[in-house]
Image (cartoon, rainbow, N blue to C red; front, side, top):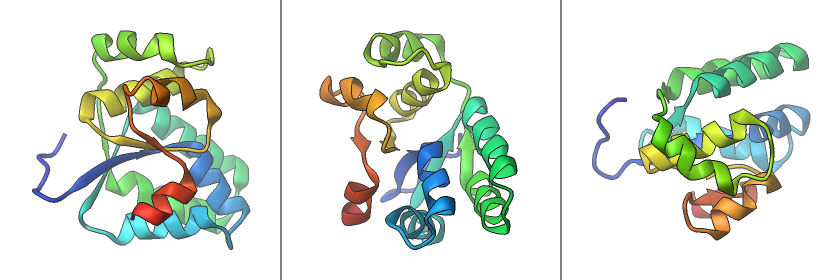
Length: 143
């Protein structure tokens, strides 16, 4: 991962934010993504499953907007190899069998990043204080 410049903030954008931005272009998700993409003080992190999800959904959504957004997001994202101990720390707090969700939380824990998602599966890990989780509305207010 690249060294962070002082004053930068690091986030992982969940795929549901990306999907919402494409399906509802007048909504807050697209505004949020555009803000994140244009702000040089914001660093994005991800993992191999997040990249796979972004590419799969961009193809399924099949629009120019989806392709442009996924391209910009992936260009700005530092892909992290998540260590096993972070995965094990997050696993008991994720209420879904989806390995990607566990890996996303572990990526945030390892990189001290904030997870931006509207997925309720992250409520327990947020409540436990292990990973900071913001919804789209909260992220828009804070950024």
